Length: 200
Image (cartoon, rainbow, N blue to C red; front, side, top):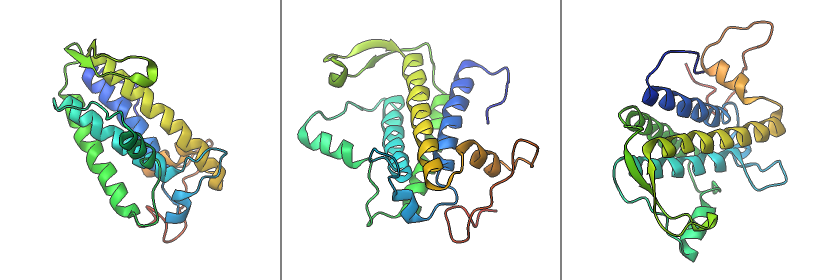
């Protein structure tokens, strides 16, 4: 949890991004691989799908902050790849997915910490929003958009997790952070042989 501090802008943004990624990652804590793929709500979203989609988003952000071309491919194949990014197939390794998420998260954090929020850059076209040309922005706009995007998915993950077993993501985050029990919170004990059950 990002508690009140007097940080510089890049550090503050990095910490807010990390807080949202904390929540998305924690949503998997205590689930089986099958539960990670469950879609208990009326949509087709799963915890695993959100983690995979967020990983794709982090990779795109890493490319942009590194100066690589991160313009999305607008084609039937590109759209198919985008939609597949919300599904963790039975053939995909959950452990590898989580390892990749953790590695990308570390890289993204380092890039945000060393970024210059006031620097000029370009936002790529976004035809789904009716924008067909690159638009001038400051890096700050892009970084704040990452907070917005990851916070949205953290909320999705919380709702889906509560539908699976009634656990709230904030309680899972606090457990993983080692917070002691109090009148508002009881640490979660994951079932044996689930994701994160062997942490320590």
